Length: 91
Ligand code: C2E
Ligand code: C2E
Ligand code: C2E
Image 1: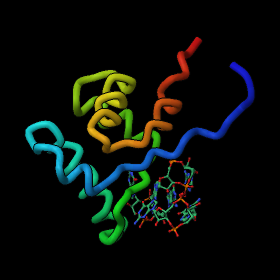
Image 2: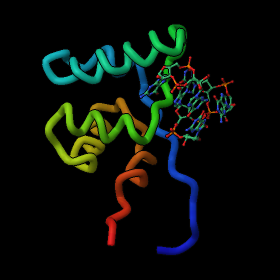
Image 3: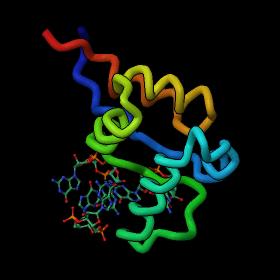
C-alpha cells in the first residue's frame, strides 16, 4: 500500500541479547554467535542480519515471523522498524 520503500534493516542489539535469560533467548544467542563467527565480526554492539534469517528464526522458535518480531522488540533486542519487514500481508 503506497510508495515502494526499501525493506527495513534488521539490527540485533547484542548487549541486550546477552542480558535476556538464555532459556528464552538461547536459540537466538547461538544463531547470532554463528553469524558473528562466519563473518569474523566479533567487536560489534549490534549485528545486522538478513531478512531470511528472521524467517529461519521463526521456524526455530515455532512462531510466526510477526509474533517473533514483537517478542524480540519487547526484549529490546530488535529495532522496532523491523515490524515493516513482516507487516506486509501477501495477497
Ligand atoms: P555467502 O552467503 O556465500 O556470502 C559470501 C560473502 O558475500 C560474505 O562474506 C559477504 O562478504 C558477502 N555478502 C553476502 N551477502 C551479503 C549481504 O547481504 N550484505 C553484505 N554486506 N555482504 C554480503 P562473509 O560476510 O565473510 O560471510 C561468509 C558466510 O557466512 C556467508 O557466505 C554466509 O554463508 C554466512 N553468513 C554471514 N552472515 C550471514 C547472515 O547474516 N545470515 C546468514 N544466513 N548467513 C550469513
Ligand atoms: P548503519 O547500517 O546504520 O550502521 C551503523 C553502525 O552500526 C555501523 O557503523 C556499525 O558500527 C554498526 N553496525 C551495523 N550493523 C553491524 C554489524 O552487522 N556488525 C557490526 N560489527 N556493526 C554493525 P559503520 O560500520 O561505520 O557503518 C556506517 C554506515 O555505512 C552504515 O550505517 C551503513 O549505512 C554503511 N555500511 C557499513 N557497512 C555496510 C555494509 O556491509 N553494507 C551496506 N550496504 N552498508 C554498509
Ligand atoms: P546490506 O549489505 O546493505 O545489503 C542489503 C541487501 O542487499 C541484502 O538484504 C540483500 O538482499 C542484498 N545483498 C547485498 N549483498 C548481497 C550479496 O552479496 N548477495 C546477495 N544475494 N544479496 C546481497 P539482507 O540479505 O536482508 O541483508 C541485510 C543486511 O544484513 C545487509 O545489509 C548486511 O548488513 C547484513 N548481512 C547479510 N548477510 C551478510 C553477510 O553474508 N555478510 C555480512 N558481512 N553482512 C551481511
